[in-house]
Image 1 (cartoon, rainbow, N blue to C red):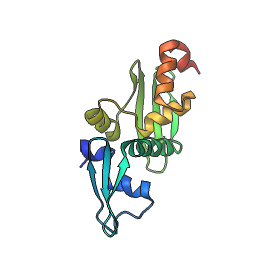
Image 2 (cartoon, rainbow, N blue to C red):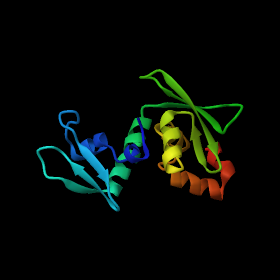
Image 3 (cartoon, rainbow, N blue to C red):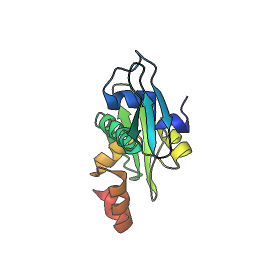
Length: 151
């Protein structure tokens, strides 16, 4: 079950960041004020930066987006179909003035716990439009909203 505490700061994320195989041991992750406390049994506990987890969170979704296929709707140029050929799943992503909106569970979890979201489907649309980050898209949208979707 996804919670506010484990959406970004999870044991599996800690394992990937540390380069260890998750599942062989129970990794304990606790959020402190400005850092994340991580304990892997058999090792000394360590503090990790929240920034490292946040970078991992974004980079993992950007990497997954590269395998997705994006099609812009002809009748509604603000809507995109994003298909994951490996899973056979399809989601619709809509561009809105505040960013992008997706139907997927990851996006809904991010909005619920973080107040905003950018899932792998959204990153696939951003790539399709020629942007490498949500902030670069939002900046372009602010300055020239018509040309952003015409690209």
